[in-house]
Amino acid sequence: MKSYDVGIIGGGASGMMAAISAKRCGVSVALFEKNDILGKKILATGNGRCNFTNEDMDPGYFYSDDESCLRSVLSDFTKEDTLSFFSDLGILYHQREGYYYPRNHQASAIRSHLSDEVYALGVDVYLNTEVMDLDTDHNRFVISCKDRSFSFQKLILCSGGLAYPQGGNTGDGYEFAKGFSHSLMKPLPALVPLDCSEPYFKFLKGVRAFGKVSLYLDGSLTVSDTGELQFTKSGISGIPVFNISRFATRGLEEKKKVEGILDFFPDYDEETLFTKIQTAVSRGSKNVFESLSGFIHEKILNEALHNLHIPPEKPAELLTKEDIRLLCHNLKNWKVRITAFKDYEFAQVTCGGIPLSEVDDHLQSVYHNGLYFAGELLNADAICGGYNLQWAWSSGYVTGCHAAKMIGS
Ligand SMILES: Cc1cc2nc3c(=O)[nH]c(=O)nc-3n(C[C@H](O)[C@H](O)[C@H](O)COP(=O)(O)OP(=O)(O)OC[C@H]3O[C@@H](n4cnc5c(N)ncnc54)[C@H](O)[C@@H]3O)c2cc1C
Image (tube, rainbow, N blue to C red; front, top):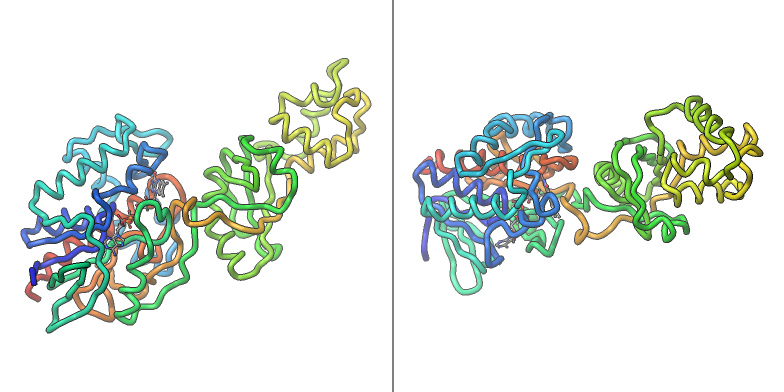
């Protein structure tokens, strides 16, 4: 049986970072990946551009069960460390509204430069190699693949969660962890589109509108976010919806009543909007629809007028103050009933996983010495903006360095 100091299961973002970090400490490292290339999922990130970190790396944008552990990991490998790491690998980057991308806007550059570094350092990479079983023997970890086994002094599980199964994720790491007494916070899709019950979505499909979405669970305001809302044929999507989705999926799972309130004018209070609409409709000989089509996407306007039984062709000057008040209220308090969420296939990350309370600040298992976890497998997720990849880089770095330093201990 071939043996190494450190074994790493999963050659995604966190696995490659763990392999590089461990190997740079001078130990022998093997990396196992079931796909035919390393970092396949990275190619899909940031719409093919890979938003790999963010200028504002506030831990408040992350969710986990142990904030102190999360903060410790993020401070051991910071956004500045990420930028200089990729810069040293030969990636030129640029920043837009706080989001960092490779300057050539190609996620493939991030993937290939990481992969090249893994090979250049002399990590033994096993592609097309699915780890099927994990056990221990005389204080060493033993993994079984289809036709052979390997043993290690330290083992890092970087096998991801359940999001984006097209990239090879089937949640294998959860089962491996359970074998070492770890519990599992129920994994659910996050950063995912949401389905709503209203019949009008088929007419709104494809519409994009600036707005704020507020999520109510059993009538209580839970979270809100503002940005470009997108309508699908069955519900709502877009970055603000992704950012609140982890609470919606958990709420639906817990059988709570889940509602969203859309505000298409978060920058105006109802009084200001009232004045603006009143001015617009008093402008001349147009009908209601023509007078207000410069305010909001015409499909949303049509639906709002339909809801209030106001004919779009009604002469604008005949709109009453009460009509205008109702319209303002409707456009700022557009209620949708959220009934379902899209499957992992459409999710960018998994929320839930191995609790951070079951690992130390180096992400080493509190139940089994020498066993580490990194990346999406852990119960740590974040909003859109490069935070989830930063977690993969930071956790990969922390585990790789610590596992290597502890060789022989
Ligand atoms: C469409 C999309 C867009 C995204 N865009 C962004 C973005 O722009 N910015 C951002 O910060 N985040 C983004 N994310 C999230 C980000 O990709 C993840 O947070 C990150 O990839 C997690 O890294 P990981 O190493 O934990 O897991 P993964 O990258 O999923 O890697 C896990 C690897 O383990 C392998 N594996 C699993 N089981 C086994 C096994 N038994 N044996 C061998 N190998 C195994 C898998 O094949 C996989 O390659 C996006 C995600 C998606 C799906």
